[in-house]
Amino acid sequence: MKRLAATLVLTLALTAGGARASQQYEPLADSVRAALHLAISDRAAPDLPAFSSPQKQLWLGTMSERLAKRMPDEAGRMEFLKTVHYEATRAGLDPQLVLGLIQVESGFRKYAVSSAGARGYMQVMPFWVKLIGSEESNLFHLRTNLRFGCTILRHYLDIEKGNLFRALGRYNGSLGKAEYPNMVRGAWERHWSWPAMTSASNP
Image (tube, rainbow, N blue to C red):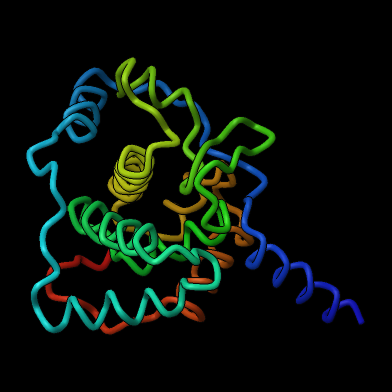
């Protein structure tokens, strides 16, 4: 009975999204802060790259089918997926990992706000805007939210020397606890698994 209850709680968490904890403020060295600010601010590619290769088209179509119930609007869904792929790949992350994290964090709700104040798809804490962003940084804007979220996760992966379990713990503010990393990995593997793409780096 206890095992069934635990499974139900995990299932509800994966379905509804909305992780309880959130990123914790940590002082950053000036060099790290400058590097993260540069990563956030770089707008060298304002237009998303075309998904012209057969592999990318297949990825986009497959992910769109999986996401259709959560995002019924096809145009919005396609823009979301292309942005996830672009920002994840840009940060050296697997887009499938990012989709799993978004499922757990916000349930794919653009305007999700946690009790701690974390915002948007990737539930980014507002203090990051003051640390590495600018006055124009709107965490409810699709690309801004994904860029911040992917940059922050990449930062945590670098701190943890590629240890995804610990990096996810930092992202959620629950370093050392297994629940959140296991939830993200579970969502990633059960709902968003995909053969590695040549343009994406697996953390």
